[in-house]
Amino acid sequence: MRGRLYYCDHHSFPLPEGHRFHARKYRLLREALSGDDAFDIHPAPQASLDLIRLAHERQYVHRFLNGTLDPAAMRRIGFPWSPELVLRILASVGGTLAAADHALNHGWAGNLAGGTHHAFRAEGSGYCIFNDIAVSILALRKRSAVVDLDVHQGDGTAAFFEDDPLVFTLSIHGGNNFPFRKRRSSLDVAMPDGAGDDIYLRALEESLPKVIEFKPEIVFYQSGVDALEADQLGRLSLTHAGLRRRDEIVLASFHQAGVPVVITLGGGYSSPIEATVEAHANTFRMAAGRFTSAG
Image 1 (cartoon, rainbow, N blue to C red):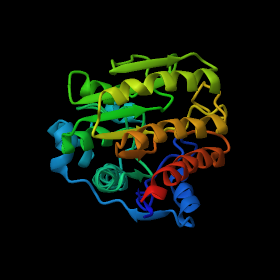
Image 2: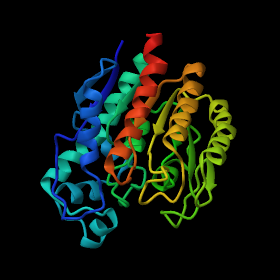
Image 3: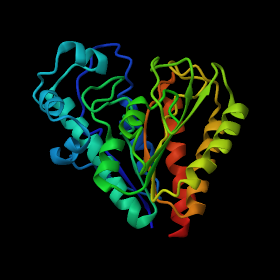
Image 4: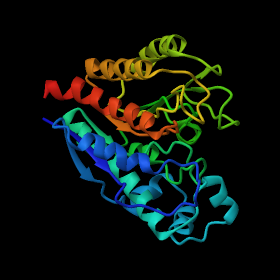
């Protein structure tokens, strides 16, 4: 059985010239995986507002959809508002919801977007508007774990579930990187600037047993690749081989434990952009090799 992936890059949105957000990577990633028989790739459905409101405050949702958020709130998000952006964000959340539904029945699935872990209940930040992982967990209400390996702490996700006994959140991130006001995850592991493969992978191997001990019914893997040495915003020094080993450790752990996995994209800002695309593609190929062969 082929791995099910969802994409939302068909909803493009305007950005100013020179903007730091690498919007092209989403299309390039889909194109890189489209020729691979291991994947069944679909456009993401738009998330329903009822499900989004499980996580997000009603007025915040209304104001974003209608383009009436305070300009300061949009600056914290980092995007200019547009109708096209609304469609893109609804599809990004919808992709994770659809991937979660598929993973529960088939072991794993992925969203070639999502991982918007800086979004809080009533505000966005750091290119994150609605928190697709939080929406999906609250829609499922199963015992859930989040393994967030983006280089930036998943502060929004941590805040959502800080007091929720049904959710375990792990964040391994750059200790001196954005966000500078960290929130409390179930387990936070801060990496020093310049940390490379060895120290990072050791921290991961020491942390994952605590997630397994929680006995989740589903895992959301925020698989950002901005820990790469070439990343312009990352401040860590992982190699491609180190990231592949990272993915292998995570996916093998939950496959062996029989826990379904949802993979979301997260960040990646390497120059050239092809390095980011390669690292993201490796994550999904690793998942296909690990899960699909078992049917």
